[in-house]
Image 1 (cartoon, one colour):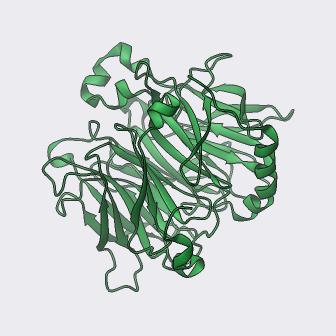
Image 2: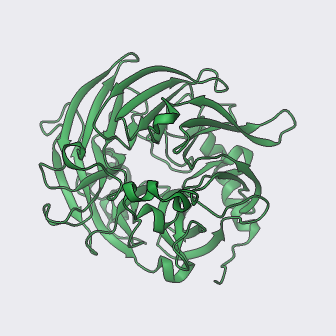
Length: 440
């Protein structure tokens, strides 16, 4: 596979130009977006964009972007107001990410490796599909585009697998905002590296890009019940995180983090230089930070539920000042809150069953609104009555989650609800129609 290169000066320049901006605007889900992404919604969000997996025989059966009105002042509050099916049928819709200017939303399929790009700036209430990238496997050798992480004028895409054997050895692909491939970066397979990838998160001030690891296509597209009975297959999950030199885009150190470390969340508090993740198979919280000598280390700092029962922690969401963390566990359907006042010793202070199966969790900038979606992977979701498919909105007063609304994706024939991103009608006024009508 040919590796496309980008000069160090170019990467160094874009990192340096926006480092200060990143420090000021580093934001959540609003707290879980790239620090290079502008126009954070720090007031009331208007829309929730949901990337949903198509289900055969349910509606049109296609993967789709669903828009829900989530402004309590709206007469359509808690209702689906728009949906955009994508071509290619069912491609295992999974994660999404905004471009740095928040005008476009990139969304990927783990099965068909197609990347769908939606214009969410021209009319935030009615996103439209404006471009499809279908040649990522052919151009890069990577499949399963998972994380979409904004860089200045660029989108960094983390793959989960490869075209050669469908295993976990993979890499990252860097695209321009126009969808042009610029460079590829293989995950390290030496000095302790297993070559696996999953999430991407950047700390510009420390010149660090941090990656985590999961498993390859042969595992994630397999029925979960069959997979867990296959001892050899269960050995093929990632057990590492990697510290990268951001400016050079080169791996600096491989950290041992057993049990498939998934989502990565940097603390957004000024002066902090630590990130936290949850390991899915071992149900642990891990802290990544420099030691007294400045050397980056990974340390197990907490337990999520009863690891012996494999609750399977999935998505996590950190609050805006780094003092609290939401953790969803798929198998027991619980949402937990951890006090991170001392990140070396997280303390669980709250838990609630929020569904028979839960996966993704998002929160508003002020932390008072929380959104939960149900689906993990099509072949991993539960069956029968436990196969709930929903998006649920909650209010959070610091002590209790109070249900606010629910959209039943099964009842409305929308498929399986997975990743969520927030939208605002102010984006239209900020950009102007003529600037966002087409990709440029």
